[in-house]
Image (cartoon, rainbow, N blue to C red):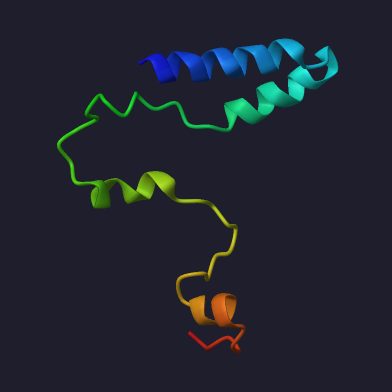
Amino acid sequence: MATELNLKNQIYQMVESMPIEQLPDLLQFVRQFPQQPAKSEPTSNIAPIYQLHQHAVDTGISDLAAQHDHYIYGTSKDDV
């Protein structure tokens, strides 16, 4: 707990010393982090592998699963 409080104080001091013009950028950066409960609180009894979908990222590539070798290794695209 003391370490956690120290870390929060360090972050607060850094924010306090930042130029006001940088604060909107900092706020935008911080909002990118998902809001999750503290690690000490169990979120559920579900195994982590079943929560993997929560970390999915929309790449905008519609054939990523079918053409993964092309995107990973640069091979030619297969006709699917």
